[in-house]
Image (cartoon, rainbow, N blue to C red):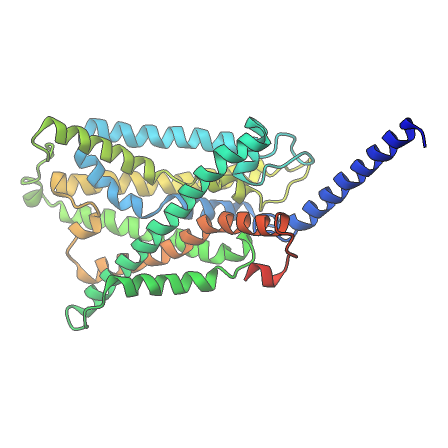
Length: 363
């Protein structure tokens, strides 16, 4: 056999291996949580984005305003809204550079690999994405337990035995254990829709209760000055407030994964329904964030609590209902942030450890 024939045979073997790998990846994408179902409608992206963004952080915006004051606080929230909307639009456009038939960046780290190279993209993006998503889920786990405990305390009015926070967190985790068996993003759409509705409801409760609290007699005693008396205290308070505002405008790290669930054709690329959903989601974000932030700060001034619901003592039943709504919301939000993590884990197990895709691997 000549050297030319040997080279041709090696080239053909390499081509066959690449084709086998491509087919294996295609079959794997048909099973993984992010890409196994591409039948989502535009309104799926709307409530997924609302669920991911309008978290319990909205209830801390009045406290952030108290650390910044009216001019700086309004500027910080408004600029964050505009910047995050613009960057989210960029992600929607980058998801599918060649609409309807080209490569789709279904996962955040895939876009990172296209930008920085395969190895560097994974090293830069995956750790940061995991920190954000796992960290957010840990926060939601604790928040869910705390708000569930607060709801029980308000509902019982001192008649129930005191139960440690740990047990409430375990109750929340039990619900997540069941929901985590859902196979893909579209299978949690009903949960996400309920979570989005609850986020709007408890935000409106916080706003209207604050407005009713701020009657003329009480408003006269409200202090809008800085709570900290030292320059260092004001600086650290301002940085803490800016961090709270930034945390409230989260959700970008799951945008590509949400868009991956929407079908795409040359005539109707996925970015059109996705952007329609994003616009609706940001309208809800504006309604929730600006009303709660400004209404809560107007009502309580620098005396507002880190969670505005704590400042609202009455009516008791309404505050209890708001806390229960927060629980329902973080249950759905946990799944939105967890689904890409499940996708990464299952990808590694299937590709690196060569485990066969199926229910045993998922469970």
